[in-house]
Amino acid sequence: MAATAGWHESKCSRLENGKTPPSDEDIRIWTRICDAEDQTADLIATARGIDGMYVEWRRLESSGLKRVQESVLPLFERTLWFRFYQSWVVPGLLQTEDYTRAVLNTVVTVRDTVDDTEGAVAARMDRQRVLHAGGRRFAFLIEEWVLRTVMGDKETTVSQLGHLIGMTATPSVSLGVIPMGVVRGNAWPTESFAMYDEAQVSVELVSASLTVTQPREIGDYGKEFAELAGIAAYGAAARKLITTAIDAFG
Image (spheres, rainbow, N blue to C red):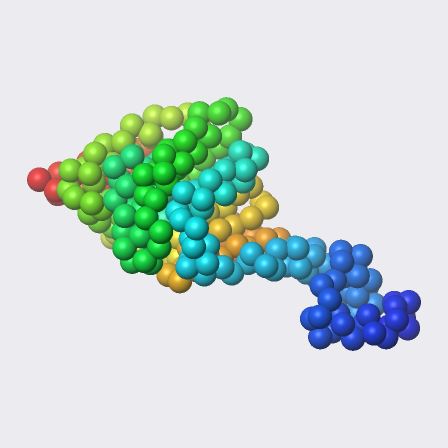
């Protein structure tokens, strides 16, 4: 390998043992020699993002939630096509202030992290300005049971659901609700995830945040999102599911 690539043997050894990270050109040479050039893009994407691919919440949130909220703003500002699937809570961009506060208070309690909730709430609310910035598309998919999950208290949840109804009138926003009784087919419930253009997928796990940058894996999430979107209710049908959830709270 070293001779074919024109490298010193020590460099080849360091690459093979993970002591030296490969450059993009190193990867191109390696895959060309191994007749695996179809894997080049995925390997380069993995190498570039390996440090941030899997980050435990305790590490990510060690300096508080406000910093986490602010850290993703550049990603939101450069993204033009957003796709969100949520099986846990209402997506952050659609949350009311009180609902966000309830969610983040729970995070502080469960993960025993720094309590800077008010600053984090303000940062998340500020991030919602991308909804009205123009030139962007937003596709949201929510499992129906999310609508029936009380966050904070019933009043907070009902107010949040009313806000969702209002958001269905936003031209750049597509809101789909996946009914609980629908035939799932290939669209199984899965972990919550967010897609940013075709560049990145962020996945919410119980213990960590997972960042996906490999084109092949991003394609897998795109297919999954399309399957889920295919069984969702939209427009008047989605609003009916939301109002039914509101009525259930009495």
